[in-house]
Image (cartoon, rainbow, N blue to C red; front, side):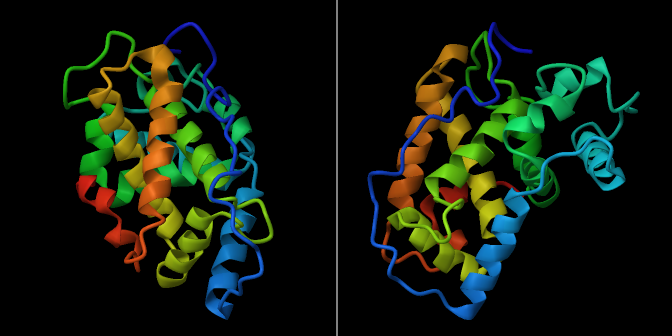
Length: 232
């Protein structure tokens, strides 16, 4: 673990009261179908005994460290990726399997960005850096709350507009996660932040994302200005 306190769930206290909109809007059949599928993903807990979850975790390791053999699903090696301990499954309790899916999507679709952030290659880094993997779980949780995805349908403007983007691209949530991770790192560097300021960094990222998701001319997830931060 990096630093003196547990990270999972530490940076998740935020409200959707601002930007609330009436929920009397309608979804297209495609938007509704894709929203339901995304919401179903949110309900899947990480199960360290499920073979497919084990394989996903192994795949994440190999994407991050392709030349390093993983000694086991419980290993001190995991700390090199920014997990709090030797067993990553304990960190998933706060957000479930989707947070692993998000990390794996990032590694596979935007490998250059993934590795650049994992290894902290850009900028003047802090002595107490944020732990990559656990920060990723907090980003997944922040997006779920920001977009109001646990409601029957989002009631906030960013969430309402996000569902429109989801109608154009079913991977919109996963892509937004990658964008948000890049934004977090950019904010971290811009603020010259250190470990205990991660909450401020995450909140600044959320505020900027809410602003971008409220732009009227955003038709696709790739139209978000911050999408340009991603490297393939």
